[in-house]
Amino acid sequence: MDAHKLCSVINIRTVLLLLFILFSTAFYSQDKARRRSIDSLGNIIKDKNVYADKGSKEILRLCTEIYYQSKEINYNKGMLQAILKMSEVYMNERNYELSLKKISEGKVLSGKENDNVALSSFLLGEGMIYSEMGYTKKSRYALQQSLELADKLPSQDLHVKKAAVYRSMARNIRQEGNVNHYDSILIYLNKGYSESKKMNYNFSYKPLYLSSFAMDMAKEYFRTDKISESEKYLNDFQIYMKNERDRSEFIYYYLLKGNIENKKKNYNTALEYFDQSRQIVNEYKIYTNALEDIYSGQAEAYRMLQDYKNEAVYSTKAKKITDSISSSEKKILNTIVANGDTVKCQKENLNYSYWLFILPCLLGVGGTAYIFFRKSRDEEENEYIRNAENELPVEEYNISFEEAISPQEKERQELEIEDLKELIELVHNNDKSFHLKFHEHFPLFNQQLLTINSQLSHSDLEYCALIKLKFDTKEIAKYKNVSTSSVFSKKYRIRKKLDISTNANIYTWMFNIG
Image (cartoon, rainbow, N blue to C red; front, side):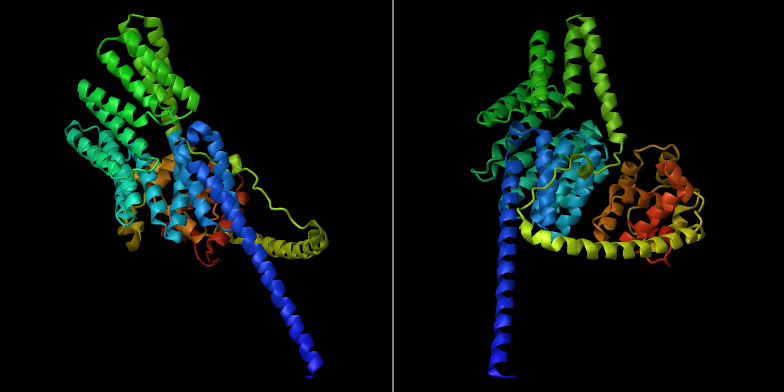
């Protein structure tokens, strides 16, 4: 090669190298700028006054924006922030189904990232929800896992997580309703109180932690008729909260003050406190479940004042909320938050002259590839549907679970035959609480499937649950109110998503998961 050609080759390579460096730098800078933008939004939702400043709906909107912007650039830290806050908002609104769904997604993602702080938070949230719903064993298991992870965290995170876990453990014992465990509740509350006091002085959430434990101590002493002790901790609560802008926690302060005044037979004063509590609920649109106790307290005050008309009014209101809460804990929603609350992500400015040139080419190539792929997939799907009826027949529901279970499964949580019958009965009754109950009996099932493919939809997971319980195509179609061909197609797509071999029986495969 002569010198002239050699110089030409070197010049071309140099230009290509420079172009590569230029584009890499541009994309890196753009990616870095978007991360800074996401982190800026993240700081908004992490602010302790966010509920006062934004409200729950706006928080969810911001979280959704953060989630999809982060997902677009594979920024897992941003996704975890958004998922954690979403699960918190849904939990506050007692929408436990959506909260557990976000927690399940967050656990998988934090596990992949080895983010023990986030994982501990998700386990804590899971424990709190199970406690509120009365599943105290499941709650204790999740809380214990959260506590074990907390011991591995830096000191500040350690004190925060331990305080929150101890508070939830106290609530767990309270849910079980054993009066002999009163001392245990106070022990856990005092442990959490102590951890809160160890937090850094400049930690902005420290007053909120201290005030929450003061409030819980006040409630415990009130339950045992130790009114003076209860009022002492209510005074402490006021001191801790004196510089806080967010007044939402005063919902419970005024509620408890009202109950105390009822005990003291100061019924008109009690009604004033209950009214103040209700006004804050309406202002912040948070902790609406407190309305049940507010209305009950008002009904009691009116009864003692012999105002039976108002007593009936507020008793009815309290009962409606009780029935509503009971119903909401059973209800399962069939859409993910992304379908209902999706906010279009902000798009970066593009070089339109470049895209006007390249877009027709991409469309042409993409269209051809899609037609070829679609034809190939349709042929494969039709072949699957033609052979689908030959799949393993569904076994009778009264089979011995001990005989059907695999050795690996025996090492996991054992399920009573009655539990299995309960799940099957929910499907036969077309009860939409099925998937929530299924998740309670098989807590690892969804998590393991999402580990294989994190893109599985809620609908995919529900079909997988039905397959695990050995429902045949016709039964699934009846429960989902779709055609049998739709079920065949759905099974085919699930196989693809989970990379299940066409030679493998999908029922056997699902049975060995979770």
